[in-house]
Length: 158
Image 1 (cartoon, rainbow, N blue to C red):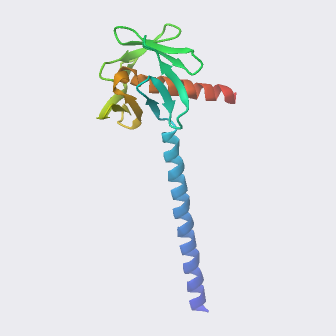
Image 2 (image 1 turned 90 degrees about the vertical axis):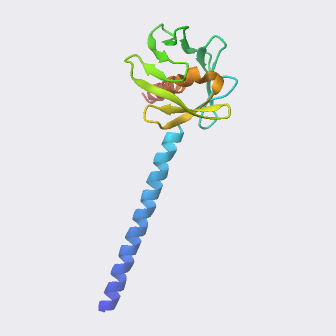
Image 3 (image 1 turned 135 degrees about the horizontal axis):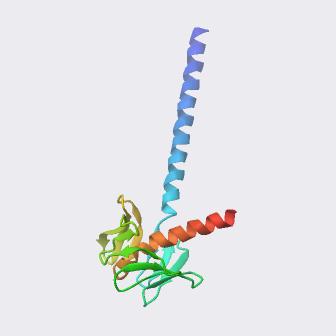
């Protein structure tokens, strides 16, 4: 009787540990998938895509970033100022790919280069996607388009 109780207690403990490991694994996978959904890719044609390769917008030859519907999101003037479609200054884009918001805080940087691709990194060094070397100045498109995407999702919920 005592041996059977020990065996059943061990089985319950093993089953509980197994379920805990599975739930932690599922939780970790869910969290990692949410960050990959927020990655941006800018190819050599200036087309901007999300992680699922859905086209979000494009960069014109005049350094104007437009969403997929052709609506201007922002443009970069000769001084590197990032100006939204209403004329508001959003921040400053540096030629090296760094982007600073209106408060002067570093938001994005361009990191390691692999061939013609450069990593887009947030201020903590987390990868947010990649950009073709010709569009390093527009790494901030990642930030702007992700913000627009989040705002549109919030509006559609209301």
